[in-house]
Image (cartoon, rainbow, N blue to C red; front, side, top):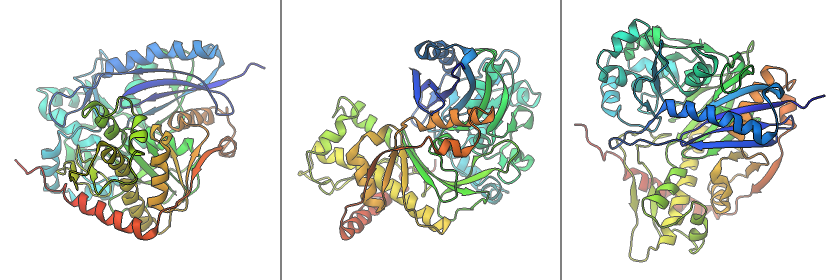
Length: 497
């Protein structure tokens, strides 16, 4: 019998990848292409959606060729994507209307302040599970409609379509299917997180014509058949990247949690079919939905800047020449020397949600070396994780006992040990490092029967590394207090115009 495979399209913030997985969940081949980042003004971040689609077309045959297979051997394709990034395009031509506005973009800060004072603002979080913030797609969509002459009228006539990146890719893969999944839809602020339908009240509040919205589908289920890139192959799943990582880490039981350490970092706790409403600055979001079954929910703590802080340390300060060097540099000192870096480059996300905050370095003295700064960079990721875990424990009524981790930063052993120390729980990394892509592949394969059930996916999970906490409790408390005081220094930096 011919071996069958599943392919994941992992459309991320800095690159797109096509990865082939076998039935055991092992990576067979990978093709990757970076795309250009546009920063036209301070706080603005944009992508060229057309470039990203061209990259998918280019990567598809590379991934197949490197695996030594043809599309006949592909059971399904699954998509994982950067979530809140907003794309608009012409229904007739398929051409994007301007550049995609990326999830990191903060141009909507003034708009969000205005919306917070508008009638009906108090209903936004209850309806969507999300706080009114620059992070999400809804305000971004409003901003684009308000700042592009004639666009709102075209959208009202149904001539202009909206989507996040998976919607854009499915549209191009299928030749015109306009759909999204519940996880990505739940990041727009336009979805009623309980009914999983677009909310007319939300669309009215944000001034978004419902004619431009895609059809909402379950995450795991056949969306359609590809006519481009992987012609003839069924598209079996679409999930936001962090929900895909939760799926790839096989966190299918309430109480199981994972954190993905990439450009930003995202901690998700499975809460089952119960929508837990946060009172501690977390997001109540959809974890995934298998077709024909109730949606599974999650609490999420979103941290804007973690891996990108290392990139800033490398590219802007030029204190290292490659990201892995930061661990070596940080190990030249035994502690941070009293220095703390809070990377509020585009405000602070969970659990603070302070869009006016900006980054600070505090505790500088003549004693501080670049080694101390390197250590402070790594420790910033750990302390931000601690803030989110504290909020998650408070909201869920549970105490986190183990944290599953994935993403590029997990290769840094010093960082992983420090995270275990500040959380005071074991930190576990799986053998499969590409959990975002693997989650998309698992979901797609599940949709077409390539894997019979969730138990089969659990049996594929194997531990590669574990870090146990070893920090003195008194030292942990003192350092955490210093960190929190450093965070307070970032508040109220940007004053309203």
